[in-house]
Image (cartoon, rainbow, N blue to C red; front, side, top):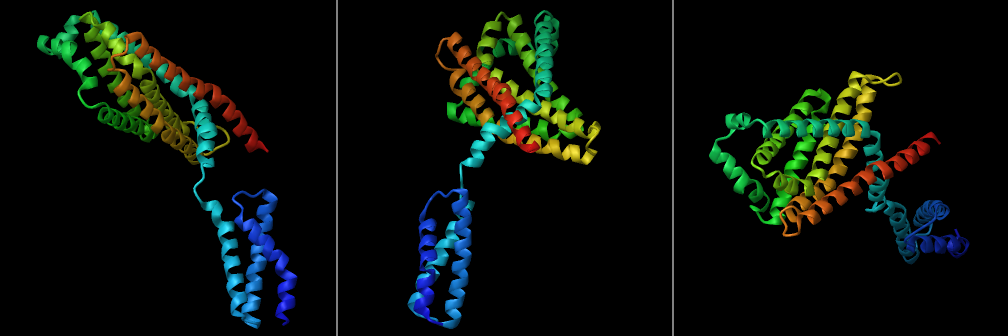
Length: 320
């Protein structure tokens, strides 16, 4: 084989491969061309090695093939595109598709919680069965407000985040059995309702709302989302619908639940930051409440507004 003629004939392809391999971004056409030139260069290297193993040519061609291989496989490197796709499409779309479950559960729990708080507040005998006078005074005088500043803010935020994430995860994971979700939400409702009832009965209802509203709107919404989606997962095998088997329906909704579980992690982190840094801060009460409500409304706009658009786009792409 005439090595010089062989090199001259293929030099253009090799130069083009080297150019494409050095670029950070390629179009779809250039990516296809890169793969094709890399495969050809690997074949050329094999031919040269078997017929005229010139060490200089082999070294240059081997370097080029390695560069081409690295360029072809570099798509496996970390990219922010999947993160953006999750934040902009998958997570809000999943929230929107399950909105009827978590919104209905949330409204129901808030009504029951308000009713329980009112009942305890107007029935002191119920409080007497659960707490002594000293315990009531300690709760109202120091424990309720002191809870939010007992630890350093960053440590408290981490503790709150961990506890809330664990509770939400339990609601999602136990949803297939239905009843455990209702138990977990019911216990949380009972604790909040009893505490609120005691505070209102002692004329400290304003303090209760001031310290609950800044973080509670978002925090409770996350809990209702976890519980509502958990119930939806459980309902998937009870009533799978006309087109899916029970297994297919359950698997589909478990996947949707996993998306929401991942998305709730940073959402609960925001709620933890509010509870640790905003709720016990020295800001005026209306400002603290306003911050919590604005963050909560922004999340609802993301879940319903952005979620509706993302769900529509996702369905369109699937139908193509």
